[in-house]
Image (tube, rainbow, N blue to C red; front, side, top):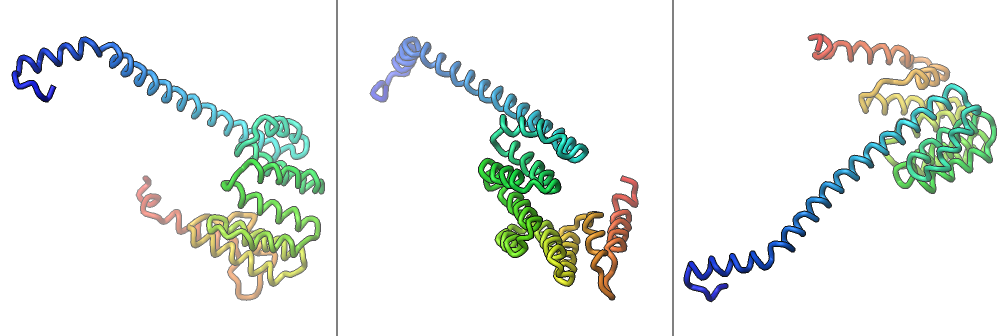
Length: 234
């Protein structure tokens, strides 16, 4: 078409080309649009499925928290059908239930399942549960080594608190005190509320000159209530 100099000839060539090729072009556009709609429908379905699965995990977590070992059978059925991050999350909850029941072999199986199917996302939580399991078995040095290997800043609070638990179980009250205090400082640095459980743990090993954790919690609550948004009633 580049050699055509007459405008009329160019128009006629375009009409001829379009007449010969409009069907495959239209079909290609239709297929592309159908594919786009299909992708969006699949994404919407996938989102719905993920939301439903996450809700099921939440329901099982509630049951494990209230019923303990009695809820393990139903939770086991779920993880058998969901060998993914959702099943792994629930497996870690189940492992904690088994640890409290002193069924350490069963707990280890669940942690191994979570580590194998949860990927990097759940690796830190697997380490935390493994450390608790080791501490319950009296393997305190192994538990401390497991915690030391967890370098993620996102888990700084949990690592320090769990280290305090291990050291307290080992009989090292000073070490437990320092670890709980580290967890409290990390919580404050992250501008998070000190949990009531951490408060009780720290206050159980408090030393002369320390500010009790319950007072720190009250100070945090007062500071939050005095923020501009709360003062203005927004």
